[in-house]
Image (cartoon, rainbow, N blue to C red; front, side, top):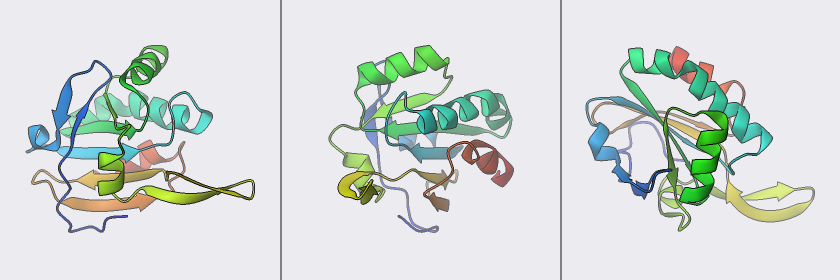
Length: 150
């Protein structure tokens, strides 16, 4: 996990509509950048819907929410439509940002070791510097936690 005070690594990834986005385009705004394991799974759905419900409050605080997973653009589109998500979901199947943000880790699932995304959320300030970093966040609590932090 990257530490607060670190310059946020650059991102250039497609969203759920296939349009590429960079962190640079959000300069001047706070960015909630959250990494999650997989679209349409119970924890990831809770987290995304929580961010979706609170999204107007994030906008009032001049902040954007961006979710990143290794799912495809098409998977993100289905997830966005099914859950009516109002924010960007970036597709990172090559693990470019996932590895740059140090969230690709060994996990232990039912005694079997596998590699995967550890649910992690970063708060990035208006200048592109990581202000806060939370690893192994609780999916249901994370959106409210981040809003209170703003």
